[in-house]
Length: 125
Image (tube, rainbow, N blue to C red; front, side):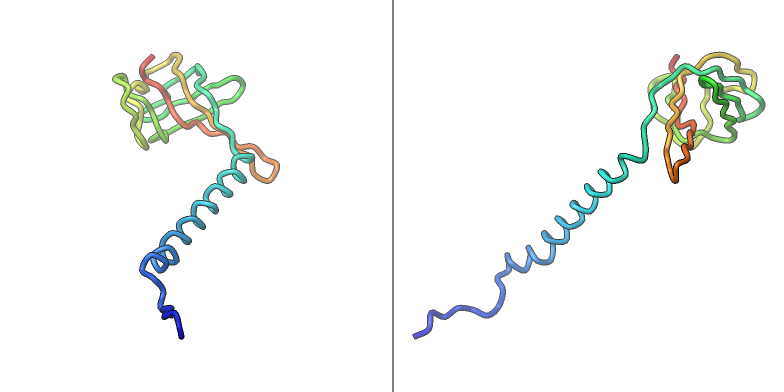
C-alpha cells in the first residue's frame, strides 16, 4: 500500500526556489561587497574651506594644504533653503565670490594611492 506521495513540487517550494533563494544570495553578495569595500573608502566630514570664484562656473577651493579646482558642476551641494542639488553649479559660488564655505571632501584609496575629491558644497552658511 502506498501513501500517495506526489512527485511534483508544491507551489510554495517552487516560489522559494525561484525567488527566495536568489534574493538571499544577492543580499549575501551585497553585504560581502559592502564589508570588503568599506576598508578601501573613507568618508570625509564637512570642513570650512577658502573658496574663490575664478570665472563663470569655476572656483578654486583650498582645504588645509590641498587645492581643488572645480568647474561647470560639483557632485552635490546644499541650497540656502537646505535642498540638496546634484551635478550642477552651487548658486552661492558666483564668479566674484571669495570667502569661506563648508565643503565635503572624500578620500578613496586604490593600489596604495589615495585620491581626494571635492564632493559637496554647503551654501547655507
